[in-house]
Image (cartoon, rainbow, N blue to C red; front, side, top):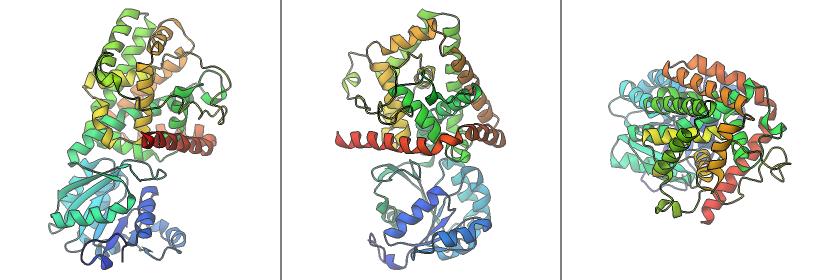
Length: 444
């Protein structure tokens, strides 16, 4: 019987997981530890491997396919990539147990909900969810979106009860609200880091090995870029390509990057400064306004100690001034689209809070923003990298606009292979960085 059960019949309640990737396994382990019975499956070729992996987990039973999971479970979670959700639900949805509850864990709800509506029996309730963090992040106190799409209050309450053992903060949204907010908080952030990786790959450099990318902001750029490229390509492709709300964000990010880079190339100092300061006011507020007095997201020095040059000290040499085109473009993009990132903090990921925190640091630290604009106009130290970053941002935007999954996968994979030798250490440093930020938030 589940230790967290609060509804009649909980002792016989079975949770089914179709898809045992990293997130599926995390859910299986945490829910089973709380006492829930788990029936799970993945592709045929993974069956034997999963049986061995979970042989010592008495509450987790690996079944041969999604038909068996669907027939045996009271609550079924589809934990598959967004690009495959339609095909997988079409295959297994008709086998869903009478009166069951079905949901999905994809990062984009538009194709997920359409698949459920098309392929699930009408007597099935639909309650979807999305943990807004990666599989290696502790889910406690992280946002967990719950979407009551087609369900009774009783069914929704059961889902809440089952997922309460994750210790996450429940956020209640519609599918469309979810996609809009995740696009606002994740699509452009991911595009920035993906473009950084492509730029450094194109110039054949490991930025932590040189003397140009040193210091707190650079630590965040390098570690989180590596963190993203260490993940599976479909995690980011699905959110960008299948989420209709993400297309305009990624297109605007590429446009902002290109236009700001042109202003730097052409030496149009006054126009660049006016545009960046207008974006600062729209996103962060006026210096004499109430928002400006709020505490910064990142306490002083919290990310300085996480450099790959010297993990204990955060760098060997003083930082070299950088124009931080990626941060300028993100804030310009938010400004152009009327996005106020603070409005979505309840649904923010640790990665987003880190990136917003360093953007805030750049735009609100006296003298730092003016220094970045000066470098953009006068200094060519980062000009080659900025050119490749601009090209990469436009490339990702075109890939999204054309809905090219295969092109996305190839673009991602070739850069992933370039950085792969350093993933292990970078992921560890990135995890420590995120923990430090979360601990600083908890201490507030």
